[in-house]
View 1 (cartoon, each protein chain N blue to C red):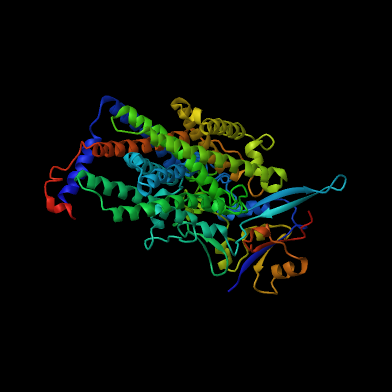
View 2 (cartoon, helix red, strand yellow):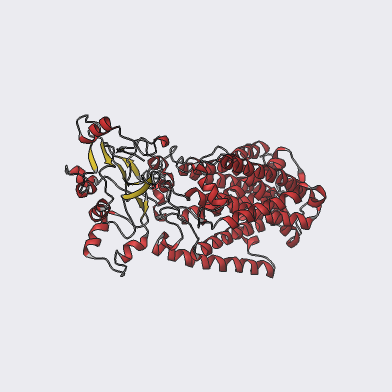
Length: 207
Length: 412
């Protein structure tokens, strides 16, 4: 069984936000809901100042705090390590949003599904299809495009990235691209002190 | 069995009888509840978007009230211990009123959690076997157990004691004493678990402190007696029920000590966070000083601190505390002060700044405020009805007609 993970090469990310839009299209996310975002940070002192773009998404932690706190068992981990949310079991208490150290949880409020992306009180056929997998009121997040992964495809954000800054693969396979990058370039997990064992790593972190 | 049915009906009948003022009071509460119910209907239709909560600040006024009310519920133990363990007769007179308050507070706390849910109708997913109850891992699952257990205990003990009094018998000591001992530990557990609900979040440094549990208990034992003192005086004013001054003196003393400890804890937190201000102090900085342009909680927390300090001065100086007007002032100040401090002042800064360092402020909407008022009104209604029945039975107005008639029954 694979153990899916992702590596961000920060030297490659140009902050174009194509991944954000690719994700939004693939997952048909309602207004204001983003499963992946790109943060930007400045570092250095004048005159040697630089800007780094830091893409973020759910880290699919091995020790996921969101799974621990979920009172109804809606959050669970698949055998391949993808942390999922069961849209039929979520009671919408928000405990996961509070527990996530990475701010990666999204509350899908009911009115989002009523007004749609255009705020006109009706949904486009595209939205009608896309919103089927969600239920209003639930709290959800990125699932590494588990449907695509099951078909042997890369997640949408990875395919969209024009600079190959997002590298997806099996972390248990020592020859996979992400495993090699982590090994050779010293992959750094986000907020390692939180001890959540993320399956997302950053390389070339120079801030 | 017949006596049980008669007991329940007589209790209900006592709730339906009262002077004009009683009906006006019930009418006011029902009006407030209706307003809140209307607002909640909007929230059910539109979702939590009608509240001020967001992805970044995912708990707000509702959970703030919840944390505060669990403390109020736990504080009933301050009457239970002297009444049942130390056999103080004066406290025994009013202990059932305190337990009625605990019932009302737990009911309010549970309601506040339920209305905070995005999908309340899916609560059945938390019923073991039917759904998946994530116990013992999820702290919310723990909270469900301890709160419903505390509610049952606080219904069972008074019910048992009152039923016996109603039939003119003495309650069986061994039985209710066991329940009381369980209830004592349970009271501490409900508030500890509620504190753990917050402090278990390693990603929120503002809550992630070992002091949170003790602070919750200390503030509960200050705000709870404050409410009980006010309630007992109201009971004394509107009924002929005997409320001895010694009970109020005892509660005022407990409150003084608890509030002193609570303020000490606040000081400890302030010192630890501000002496060497690290990144983890950002939330407390936001609370007390504000972060840049964002400082909506600043006036609230300083008001709360001021109120608590005035209250603690009144309570700590014996001649001041003995004056009933000043004592009442201290109770009101401490009650509101702690409501701010451990309500919004505790919940909101946990989210500001977010773990990613962004600052999103929270402002409750009118809907949240009306719903919250309605739940407080609902709690007041529950308490009023319970207290009405309790007082009627305790005063001896209600007695089972065959209560003492059969001597043979006395032995059982």
